[in-house]
Image (tube, rainbow, N blue to C red; front, side, top):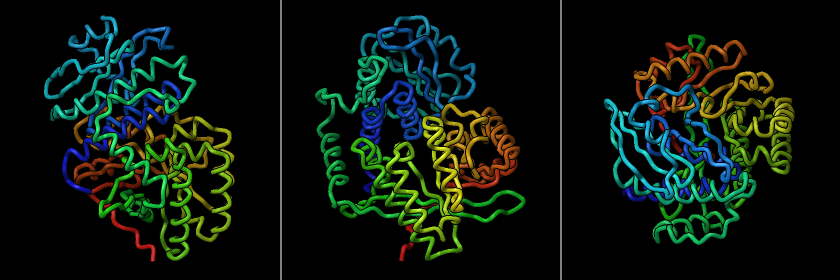
Length: 410
């Protein structure tokens, strides 16, 4: 794709809006939306200082993404007013608070409370602050307007007068591509390399891309639209079929493929995947399916049964982005999991943040007790690689080791 920064900004804005419109349920909307912001803007954390409001179905709590023990920073005197004052009437960007070398950006969310973005050392550009205002307005409206949030926000027929013309054009273009045969999905691969003393065999993760008019479109741009319009399961099954076909031709390789939470919780999609695995049973032992912990927890009974059925064919499973949500180790004991992929938000600053190192060490030690191997995501440089190795992690994945490249299907 073009290197024009405005294109990446447009994609971020579109992605944030779609994350709001796709999901139902207050905590699911909030967590998904904040994780998009954290990952897209390279933030350290995003905090939601929520006010008590019975009409909105909320209570007085502080939510933090990733969900680890709150640091003393959020209790700094600079935030006292936000804790004590009433929630604002409108959604808007309020101010930047600098504490030592870090930057904290405060947004007021209409009648709900405050969103605080925490970025280490490097400030956010003003254009990014402006770009997320419209999605925040929609988030606040959706979050407040639903009684206990039982309806899907995508059913809202509210006019999108606060979307820019450019964003509307991008939205329609992506929707058209996903709704027609005008798209061209391609698969890339990235290695997951052993860093443990036992030197376990390396494997690869399959990564989805879309080619369109000589542009390579990244999944964070089109996946939200695919989720919104119910096409994500079709895409997941296409990726899985292509991966199994590849493995049949390359029996010496092991590949990881992602399953979205929507697909995992869809009984028809699970049936199709079961048939697909059964028809490619020779390749199944070389396949590892990556699922998110949130999806597994949300539909635990059906999920466990489905996973157990596939393990009979030799399929392995990995929990992706472990630690980013409401993780608890006890649930892992019920799942046939071979790998835990530790969320990149804990890895990317692990050389400079001791709390991250403690969290990673805890996950690693608990996983070893359950005979589960660990994978560190977002390993960006040699120092990070050395640190995760010191902490006893089994595998590493990131640009320091290997950049994604096209998967040679033929």
